[in-house]
Image (cartoon, rainbow, N blue to C red; front, side, top):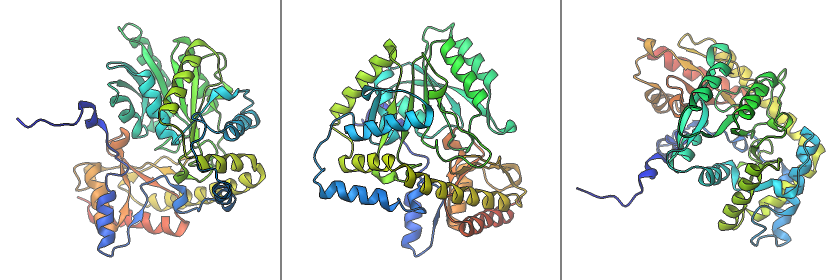
Length: 408
């Protein structure tokens, strides 16, 4: 018997989003031009704004390159406090904000702090691929609520309530309920009424509510975003956010947690998250100063984020129009984030599953997407709609050709 040095929990550590990267790189080495529509990275197509880059350079030239305050430099923390006051009307203190190396690190810290082996978390599918990984790597389990595709990817509120009610009779309560708004991978913005019901459900059953709101400013015409901060008053909750999406600074790796309430659960969790920050020393110091400057430059930020969102909305519209010509897929029109999440009619195509579909699409048409089963939705695939209209039209046109060529 061959023994492994690896831990049992390490088997859960995997990224569905990046699993085709090595193959895509090999195709590029062969001289082929792969179009990457698999990564939600706005900086690939919308360069990080110059005023943010200049602020980073200034931080470097001023020598701000040493270890910084573990929970975040005061300038950035103050900027985050002001952002939530001005955007959402929420009053916070310095200790209510924890700066992390992206939301990815926030998820790791949060689950390490909260989850013992066997503990349960309630998430909704389709989900961001890292959620189950971050839970299972610490021995946790997850219950799955759902977004209803037949109703425009709306939250199945009745199903969510039933899951919570059934769990009340179990030996272990739900440690936390995690939602994503706007949603990755569906691009859905949760209506205020539905979000209010989720908040009330969590409050009624005394479940810590966690809301990943990294796309809070990437909202399309006609949709309206509501932060959990506006509704979850007087109950324990946390919001995950960062600079990657709305500030177009993915590589800066600046995320943060806000937990404005002062109940026992919130205070205990914030203290422990601060301990985790101290153990890993600090987030990227010059990047923190650059993001603080960006948040303070509201006029320039509003101008650049509006332009970026208009371009993304146009790319989504172009992709959806082209996709509508394909009888082998169907997709709910997104109203936020960067994503289209089509359902594949696998019975009409010569593929065994969505993994087979996306791999063959990459190999034959040089378009890299992500399998839906990685998001808990087999039979779907995710298209990142950040490229210019003409690129989206060409790539989705290739998807259409691909499906036609592989029809049964």
